[in-house]
Length: 184
Image (spheres, rainbow, N blue to C red):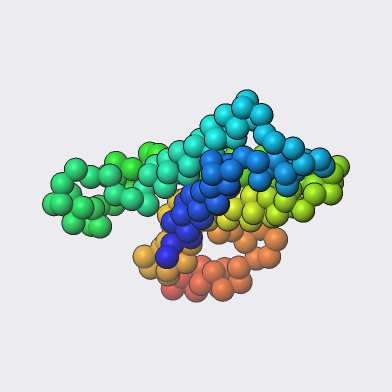
């Protein structure tokens, strides 16, 4: 499975994992994060269930907008979707912006969970920081390495975007000298 699709399904799974207890029983969350045990008020239940539904919706939107699920209307479109290129694919304009927005969401939630963990020392905040941080790292990797196709040379098979800045490419320099020697 491609890392990009792993990231989108991982995001949806992580958000669904968090949404389930928020929707099913807000009292469990209140008991885990509060020092005293008490019943949740009607407002706390409303906000908890609303947040749970929002997390589910966000997870589904990430999966749909990154192109993990084909959004075509007929069977013939899905069979030809494997042949299309990234430029002609209708989901291509939404994949990278969705990736960046979800990456920023994971990074900010990881920071928030870590800050709460350092002040309160509660284990659920540490687990949240680890989950969000892991998905944020995978999302950052996807932004840096998986969001654009490399410029591969047909002749040598090497990536054209590389440079020899800190260390010179002696093999390439030697090849240029040999070509200049043959031309003279």
